[in-house]
Length: 173
Image 1 (cartoon, helix red, strand yellow):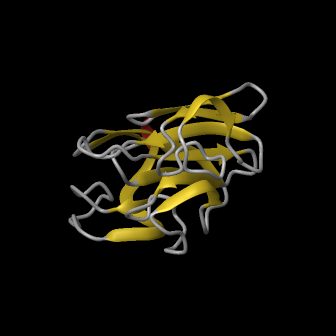
Image 2 (spheres, rainbow, N blue to C red):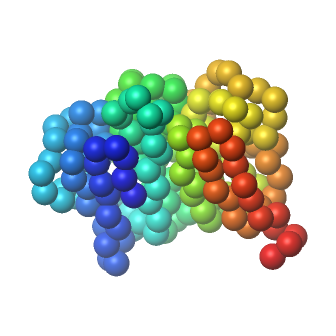
């Protein structure tokens, strides 16, 4: 998973290592410095999946999220609009992985341009900036600093673009 200037890799043992620009905490090692070699992110549990939340085209900061073996989610990096999912308790940058509040039973993560989406019990949960109706409603402004249920319905798979989402409905699989 990677943003415009950083890369995170998931090893087979469940450890996450990141390299590149760390100005907004993208490396996840507790610091805000660039790293020219792979550096261990401080995710406290075995990781199953990672996604990078890409910023708008003109921004250089990004957020990384990891789904862990206990079916919870940790995020780190840029948090200007709730992407870390801290409920507003994290400042603009989160250099260490933060456990997203209220998520247990997550079975998939989805990357997008700035909001973060997770699948839980077939339903889609989202947090971060609301834009372009990506939460499945008409709302295109504001921020969700903690995860909320979306109106996207039940999907077995989703993909997000800059201004759109496509999905496979759960009952069609």
